[in-house]
Structures are given as structure tokens and as C-alpha cells.
Image (cartoon, rainbow, N blue to C red; front, top):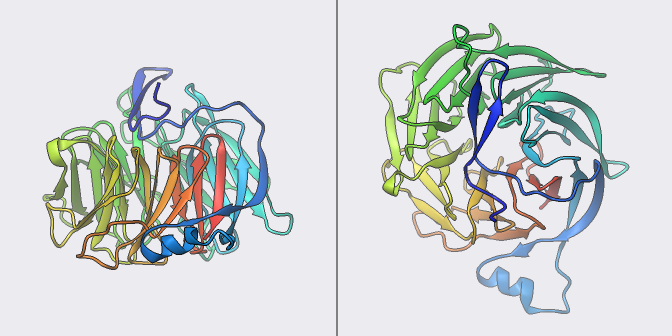
Length: 386
């Protein structure tokens, strides 16, 4: 039986009702083990052209070693996010995937002197997190907050000794039913704004300073699987089960722009906006092996399709410090880094390939340290220095 599914439907029981939460991937199962961390070296394969020949041609030359640190959780890891605070360069949050009500979020931080991860905090979470994001606050001048989605959007305050829930945001208080949230994004330009996507076809824009919804709109004809803000306070895009990517402007919500529709309207699972060049977005289709690159100046047709994976893709992320590099991870246990600078010429091969020991569920670059990338696989969190 296939260990991973691009869309995993699972039933969860609420105290007042039953609801179905859409997950974009199902982490693979492995033997149970306790939380632990280790550091080691790993090989990075250089893919494509002369670089690939140089990496494999001379057997007498040792491949370049890259540093890697691993944290092993006591459960399957799904959600993951780097902290962006300058005083917490190696802090991440990870969420469990347990198919029951009681789940966990752990905060882990790398002890650079000891060379290992330490769990510095944890809290219970109802149902698995569909996404985890730290507040975009590099100077650390605001409260140290963490947001999660699952059945609701929740904000958590991280203190020295404990993590406490700051608030629970629910825009459907007149009903005993809730529509589970598939994803969300925290606006980096205006950190008072969070946008959520839901299986009920809506996107909701929240003001997290007042804990009130600014607006809620029907964004798609079917479930909305992801939402992403542009590098601005007002523009965001969404992707969903109707196979479309749509762009919205909070200053004029009467209209939206369909910038892409997949062939045969295959559902689109995730969306990533290039923060260095806001003309470009990336998405991928359910059970498909290629990354679709979109240019909002030329809607309808992709400007590139990155075809290097042998199994379905689970995650995609733009390199934080570059306008033309993007990374993808999937069921083939590979993390591939692509260089888009040759566009509009076709992109044939990735420039780097990391071979993991299991399917990659989540991948993310550090915004503070451009040489570090984090991945989740099975029960493990790994950070790699490239």
C-alpha cells in the first residue's frame, strides 16, 4: 500500500460535530522511538551538466561534505517552521501527525556548542496541525507568538518556561460546526494580518491584534488548499481543489484574477510566492511529479515546469535570499534545488539533489540563514547546511 498520499482524507470527532480535515500529505509510518538529536555529515549530489560529471567522474576525489543535524520526535512529524527572530536563529517548531484528537507541537532549538537539538517547549494541540508559522518579527520587538491551524486558527505565546494559548479565532460562532482549515499565511509586510484557507471554499483575513475577521470571501468552487501573501499588505493568492490559482487584492475584493487552471482541473495542493521577485509563484498538482512556475504578468500558461522527481511532490519553497532559486521535495526521497535564471529557456535539470532516507513531507529555507534548509521525513526533522 502506498505510504504517502497527496491528499489524505481522515475523519475526526469533535465534541459537537464530525468534520473532515484535508491534509496535503500523509507522513510515512516508522518504528516508534523517543525524541533525540544527532549531527553528522551528508553527501550532496551536484546534478546536471558538467557539475554532475565533476561530482561523479573522479572516484579518488571525496564528495564535498555538508553538515546536517537531526532531531527525532516520538511521533510522525508533519508541520514545521523556522523562527525568524534574529536572537533565535536555530529555533523551529514541529507538529505531530497522530490520527486522533490529542496531538503535540514541540519547539526545538539547536545548541550550537553541543551540536545537538534540544526541546525547549511543547504543548498539546487538538488534531494535527495543518500548518505552523512563527510571527514574522526579526528584531524580536513584538510578543513571541506562534500560529497554528487545524480545526481553528490559534495563536500561542512562547514564554521562558511555558507556552500558553493567546487566542482561538473562529468566524462561525453561530454554528456548532466548524469547517477545518487547510492552511494559512502570516503577512510579513503587515504582521497584524493572517489569511486562512478552508475546506468550505472560503478564505478569511484576520486582524490578530483585534482578534477579529477583516473579511471572509468565497475564493474557489471547491475546497481551498492553500493561501499565500505577496510581498505586500494587500495582495494574496489561493489554490484549491477546483484546479485554479486565484489572485485577490484586499482593496478591491469585488474582483479576482484566475492566473492558472490545471489541465483537467486537477487539484492544486500548495502555493509559494517568490518574495524576492513577486511576479513569480510556484504550485504543484495532486499526485503529480512536476513543479509549476507561474508569472502573474502572463497568466494562464506556466513559464516553466520543473520535471525532476520520480514520485509525487509534497512541498515547494523559494530560496529566501534568491529571486531565481527554488527547492522541491517529494515521495521519491529527494530535495531538488532549481535555478530559474535561464528563463525563458527550458529548465531541464536541478542544480543540486539531496537524497534523504525517506519521503520528504515538508521543506523550508531559513529566512535568516540562507545556507540552511529544513526538511521533515517520518519522525525526523533535519536541517542541512548547503
